Length: 294
Length: 283
Image (cartoon, rainbow over the protein chains, first blue to last red):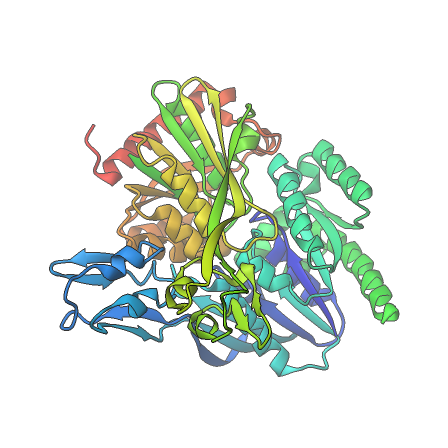
């Protein structure tokens, strides 16, 4: 199995659009995961049939029993996350701020604090015409999105370990959800756009990927919106020895397809589709090469 | 007044709105603009200026191997699995550590002390006479964005008018950015993706008690679904920016529409007035 993650650094460059289009074009049945657990969108394009949902338990969090609390404030003094505050004569833990370290439970002289499990999301397994899809829903504002990403990948791999390709739609950024997404993947496809922000964020996310040693590939979305920045990105890729495997033009068919809830490749013969077909062919070469090396 | 700019979905134009609002306000008053998208900070690209930098550090444990008797209490206590106690030595995984200080508290031998570990930087610049830009940078490869956001925010705690540019998403970095703000500008685009993620982001702001105002960016005039959502949730659309290749070009080369056109400065001044009303801040 080859594990391929589509990521971007900068948000909104077109990861999900490209992931869904690749899912349509690549042969055979796929294993797919949406690891953008904060705001999962891949399902909106793949018409999934939900098979089952499992609760996701994040870190335990502290709860202070107001009937036992004597209001000494030791918990507030020792909390490094500013999660404990007085409320009347007793103390209360803010669930959004608590990181579950259990220090307050340790320092409480009257054992008023207990660590309690909480559900901070759910993981959903669906079937689509193109294969298995696992995605998640994080309770808005909850932490541990890196752990939830791990749970999504784990559930996906449980469905079919013999699939040839595990296709992952990744999160933006470079922090814990991204690191959790790319750990253990063989190839990352970084989708960027020709803007100063796009190039800046490409460089940063590529630096993170280098610490995990997957094969790095780049595609430029909306490349014709600024040809000179597209050229800057191309030059950077040459300098860094990173293959540029696709250039997709700005195309109103993309927004139209998202509104229809289908991959852009279903919209007859758009310029974007033609470009993604070339991207797919280059990608298949890369995956084949990688498969041969094993 | 503290204004956050957030979105849920990435790439909707948060940074563009935050930068243009700050540029406009800085023509008339003192403004602090804070880049809280510390995983991929971009505001500095729109305000090139010399910077001074300070490191952001978090405390991490160091174990004195001579005093430690490998009793294992620290490893048992650590909720994050950052300490593994073996017979001969202790393994510490710094990326898993949340710097809670628990291991130090539970050690019966007082064998643990803390040292600062760098996880990022904060830069300061004055790109316009009345604009201070504070940017948080998470070191590449480090997973912990929240302490860098916290450091960037606390550096501006005493400033009167502050604009915070949030990261995309709905999890802890966004909560850290929004907390304590008077109002949140939610930037969206009129696609099913934009609306899906707007719904989640508004939910986060609601849970934090921060009122939201909606900015529709790159509108092609087909905003019905977004407008219906706003009507049903009693949310005001406080600005609509049309899709325009010229605007996209200005933005992509790192310029600002308010720098190019005084008309846009008027629009962003009006946006600020609406933010004040939403945030319940006296004129």
